[in-house]
Image (cartoon, rainbow, N blue to C red; front, side):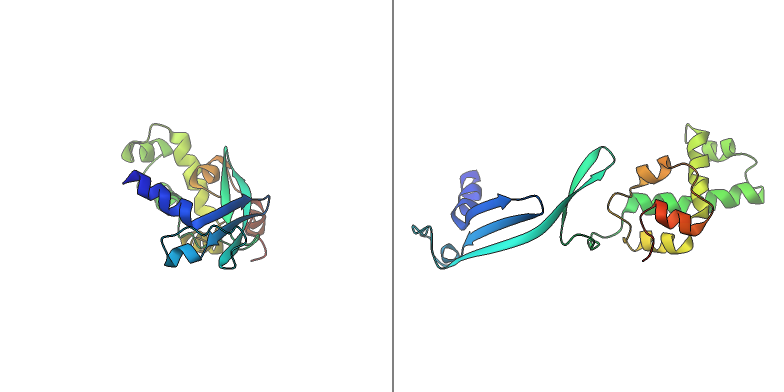
Length: 171
């Protein structure tokens, strides 16, 4: 079974070239229709597909972004990031309304060991509304994760400065 899983791609793919800004895959089209492997390296039925890619540093990790540079990937929403920004207005409302008398009280209610985490989340209650909408739609920059956002500390008060800092200005 495992040998078949390796054999099929080996038979179909003639070569894969990884370049700085693209990945090229050359497929033996004739082998899709027949079980025989084409013996001629210059087979007319080969098809070359080039896919633009870029490497993007995301904190300590590096992600491979497939698609044209500058275009947002349709990757869906980041559930962890959305959950983080949805806590912020709730926690701020609890504090400002007096339902909770301190950040420590919210930490205890939420079973969070660190009240400083609660403070950092509450800062996000002042995130520009259009940025919140874009994050909910999954349109944030690839490098913007919940962990990175929470480590940024207090965001600038001015919404335009927030857009620049988060890499979401001008859109």
